Length: 457
Length: 114
Picture 1: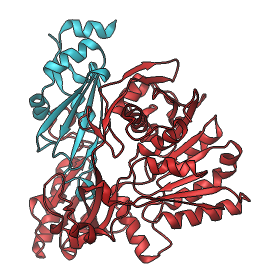
Picture 2: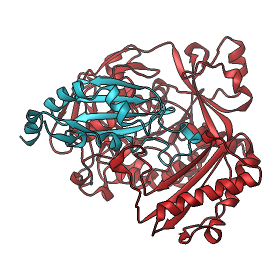
Picture 3: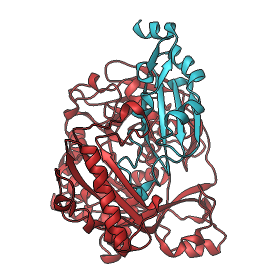
Picture 4: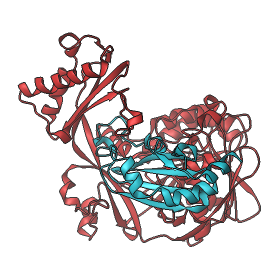
């Protein structure tokens, strides 16, 4: 299928909770071939497993279904295809919901596909007895130390199953856990006929995917020289103009806000980066030091010459496990003497808790004075002893839920039994919330079965 | 050589990586990049960020992007949902590093004006 054509792939969602205006404006305000949407973070998988445990029809990103309800007619009219990891831990339930929305719009005949096989929670013990150790990549510890507390376990799948789903004619491709860049690499593989082993091409698609995976973070959002960025309110989400030779342009729709230049794109290339010479995915090892980046007209940045190396024989696995409890709360303390009074408040809270038998070790408690220098701790010019007011933010954590819960009720009484000028208490007592720990590990690719299923509305 | 903040000659982006954060420092010019490769050592970054990072500091380079990428191994108070910190994801660590003051050669500053 390789030919001289340009394929336009946009990303309209950088994370679950990103603005719904991103994807809506992408499909409405200019030409597009593919819309990708990223809904999953590590913590999301654990929450979704819990939801699915309570209701077998849940456990996917319901926001995705609401979004499709708004944009489906335009998608069909402009022949735009969608690739989204909205399936969470229940892609088939997500597919059912999407098919229903399609029928409600009279779009019978449209196809929806799901990619499955990433969710290995149920098969974990079998894999372990088959020799998979799931050693923690950071600490080297064996999984047995947390096995009983594991709440989700997902393989980061690659882009080829997505391409397979598109080849089957799907309008909407729903995946569970996969790599973020894979959402855009999948359409490129499909459109250009790239194969496993086309390492430079797969690496190019991976670099493109990394640039757009956080939405507006490459088009002027979270950019150091923020004053130079026009109209962030109407920021355009990123679009890749991909070509069969692996070169691509990053751009945005005409008339949208934000900026696409070498600097805004380089900012995102640096995001969540480890060793830039070896960016590992299940499809390829991409070399982020290999390519050329250049301005190609207003709000257009061209990347070419990306190099890649063969992928490893392992998938990365992300597991989450229950890791105790935490509780965090805030009060605002006005001046005069705001910082001094807030410090007294903190002392009072710890002392009252101790009086009732609740002492927290230093690493299990925190006090912050927001406004006096919290984000840039230890940098003298970023800290002050004389803020006009501060937000006292306190928290505790630990394995004992009752002890963690005891903290919340002692924060609020400071309003009447502490120094003067304590306010800003709203939203009820801080409650204990579960801490979700992450367990990064690896699994042999051969032991993971990936399936693609297609249904018609 | 005048003492100037790193923000005069570079930009930055940061985010979480496990229990640590990465700070990508993007030099504004080739001369600034050549200077920073020498001056912005892991030791200098570790000292400046010692209130934020308790772990090791590692550095990687990408010449094509004029990028020095620093990994701060223990900078999030536990990382993920275990952190009690306001900035549990290291989103502000880039701007923290840009506050560092450096003795920058005149010719590096002159190239910026050009």
